[in-house]
Length: 515
Image (cartoon, rainbow, N blue to C red):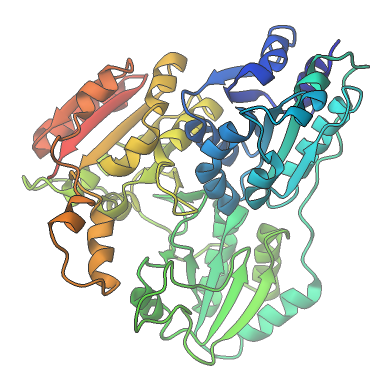
């Protein structure tokens, strides 16, 4: 057994079942080991940014890490943007990054680079295996590091000779880390805050946005009148009919300030105080009103669900939560063809248990509004703000949950960053329906250009934000990667195509022409 095989066996023993990969020469012994070890599914991506995004989507749904297999520093660098998003999502991921053989490093070969330097900004744990005899244990340690609550990225650098040299065997898995329990004092402080009569917002994130945590939050809201809110972009939230509804912090700086204008105190579970995404001339960066108090019920590494349940009990809250969303979809939909009518169609046909990967950006409000009362589903958002996440996250989610329908809503500009994900969906026969909002523009940047005070844009500036000349053809792009595709230019066409996609299995792209 060589080092690579000992590593694959150790990863499988530690619960890693999927490898999203774009390998090169340095990783060939790991690639060969995949045929000698049962239990590891190999999924090829055609670009490393798609590979890392797939691992993110998988981890959000599976709640355990996949591994990525990346080629040297440049391969890792190509994947950094979606590792940034995954870090913000607190997704557990184990990166395996090949490196030159240890004895080859002295020659500064063309692909030599500072792999650890690339890895550190997105990784909580970085290690380079010094010997084939330690690779197995290093792999077990990497999984253990990735599973540290609330979830994080571990990067293991694998020099080629540590992969091909002899090893002694696989390593036993380490105990799965558990979130820390919150202190009684933290619960008592929150009780006192919620009883002091001040207007309160309960801001929750992480596992607390799943059904159990939401029920507890709804109980607290029913007892105290506190508003429940979540961050603008959340890694995963369970929403729709029968689930506790909550407010989402808006995107723009002045909207955030308005959202929190009446909040006298903020009780935080797994999140951070709100700030604007960017600085703007004359606009605040801090989202809370002056003098608003901040109380931490649970930090990100702590058990937010247990904290909310303990708080609900300490308050004497009723067992039934407030703010349960009804099942309500539009009985009739107007002929107008825009993001709102499209969202109503999606809500009407979205099956129970679906997963919605959302990078619709400026075209997303309609879907978000309509699906709030659709069949219960999971919603995955663009956590780190680096566009090009939606398609690969949907792909990884479909690998994690093959029996659930995955719907991806995506702007056309952002989808171009990782459109290679469609090829993987076709290859793996994944049940993903992608709706491309084709407004032929980086629409959010047109808005931001006006907001930052850059002056009146001329033709050169506007051309940098425009996707006409030539227009992207998503039917051809998808078809060229083996995915069935169609185009809708009115709401009736879209409903027929989307309803058909929901009845069938397999990858599908629907381009909706809005610009």
